[in-house]
Image 1 (cartoon, each protein chain N blue to C red):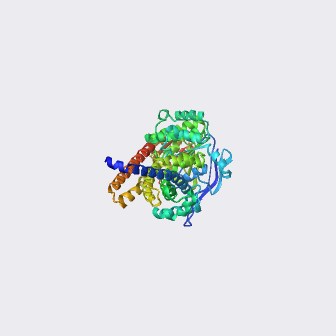
Image 2 (cartoon, rainbow over the protein chains, first blue to last red; image 1 turned 90 degrees about the horizontal axis):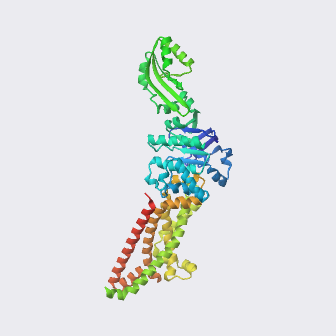
Image 3 (cartoon, chains in turn red, yellow; image 1 turned 90 degrees about the vertical axis):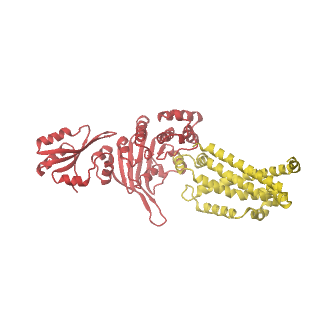
Length: 339
Length: 220
């Protein structure tokens, strides 16, 4: 549905130092899925999402939406194609001087939707975002979450096939963030709208994404299904992002101290298998004593990932045996504090 | 009091009408020209979708040049141009052209800064929706800038009233002229005082009207 093909974006600078915001990035979002791009600020994710509807035109590469290469379109055709692509923003971008109703109705009128249908659509989508009773309020009278709902209704009212979300929850508190994420899930499930979002919050990825791209310094450094990324992260940056949502990280000093005797390992399980029975098996079969340091369960959109950091105490030989046993059982094993 | 009204009433009446004529007519044309200039300035500014260095810088230069000329000099400097446009150089008709030329660039600058304050994100949102540029100008930029534009036009109108005081020099009359001819040249200080008081009242009234209208449009 959305495809970026080897997209590079260079911002020329007067001092002769051109800034490469995106370097040969390719992504592909299937119809009906929710894909997320995560990265720190300045990583290029904003540029990436703005390349999708050509608010920023790529220096190189192609942008496909529903089989059309946008980079090849005339201005007029591009304008028409953009109507199929909804977008929501971190700062909502509503008209301050217009009521909630008008904020949704004005773009529809401008895009030539017949008058009778405008009213119908506004009410329909206000209902979907649960804000029907606020239709006469002005944005200044709404909370951040409500403003974002209006912006979502505005985007949906054009009945797009694709929704782009540019840090839509970054200005919201955690509870409001959750309600907006649930709304996005509902939109995706009920209206079948394909969603591409960018964020710097791992919990956004965790809760609603099917597939994740990690970008850093304009490069796509890692990608995979959300489950893959949560169970087998490869890049340090990805691991850092994972650390932000769970108590995964112990201090290096503590790990070094514990590693003097036995080994500190991280076990990652997929599914509802909590790992407890496996650990008791390990103690039965090998001469090791496991000491659980941290444990948690992360609910992803498409599954559950369990995380267990364990201090295995025992002879080196026995510890090695237990590790290979665990690996055989299909558990991701990572030794901590070993470089 | 009654004696004063009897003696000067009709003079004041005429003067007020003349001032009103000059202000309203020149404001009308100046706003049209000013808004167009402001929109051009904002659209062709570097970094905007329609950026055009040549247009932007020539407009800038033109506006700055006109704005550097004091009105009283502009009034005479423009005589041939005024004659060309309206056929006469005296009376209310003759002063309208220089008033417009004086006020339009000023209004353009004021509206330009009002438009620049419009949240760029909203404009971007509308571009992303596939709304046409001219529709964005009307329905986003000018709409969102309305409160600021009303305040800007209030300022412009008040300074226009000030400029009309010099219109007497080309025989256009008006309150300023009345105060000058009678109050100053003939030592009728009462006329001077009354004119000043009237101007103060007009300006005060306009400013509160502008403030209130802007507040109403703001919706905050």
